[in-house]
Length: 422
Image (tube, rainbow, N blue to C red; front, side):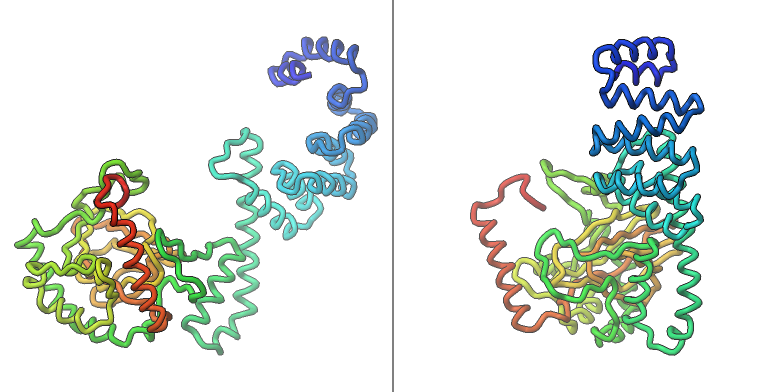
């Protein structure tokens, strides 16, 4: 029967029919033999006879989904849509994530004038697809149709929601509450996913997750922003007279998997001019940038021996992209103060993309996936530093600080072993 299937695919029907005869002589009531007979009857224009055989086939192999799909296809040809739906439900009872069964059910619901239900089923079909799955051309075409139907349905639902929620939104408060509702609905509509912290190191539980934090948590932001012009002048001075002090921000040693950092590893296309580097003071750099240092020293930055604070000018070259990545921990947050921002520079954290504006700072959780790009013809320059997550209590900060030191000391006890980390 495997030979029959191959010959049918190659359109060598006479040979397939001969081989079918040989198989039927061995086991005439084998489900595969009966299934091929039903297929031929259906093609010959006798769906009723084909259905009778397929009902017997399904009774012999009730957990074989392809037999039920053939039964459903014959029922569709006969216009028996309710019966077809029942058979597809039986198939999905056996295998709830069967891609073809879900696609067939979605198409049937469209035929039955139930487009909203069809979109839900098509959405489940898309969820059943594994990453990088390669499909035969007919199924790929059906998957593309499913994506369009899901998108169309989401647009229709969105229009309903906008109309019904417009008055409530106009009367209610904005800010974080509005953002949470909007992101919730975007996920339901399939427009965006909800990103959560995925740090490479310490994950502190039970914190409220924000991509960009509200300014009200950081009363010192406005004071920092008033120093923008002075700090920008110092950055320009660095660019003009101390290029040697700008080192590659990404610098992995040999023997580590580079993944998304392959292009930027040890490259000055993303450069850092450190003032503090994991708690170490870069005295020469600080002497060049006294106003930046003064502004930073008044801010409650992360203070962990050997790990913080960190503060630096980040210089991203023209036509350079920082790939999506996550930081080490959600116990700290990252501050950006844009200083030199040509058009075409943007930043994404989770599901929200923003344009940098010179002199307007923001604070974000870098343990949530983020990326940046400079599509202009000149470098982009910003000041970056880290602060404690304001949701941590003083006791929690103390415990996190000490735990971080203990982990570091434990791992460093055996000295510097090549290929273990940055």
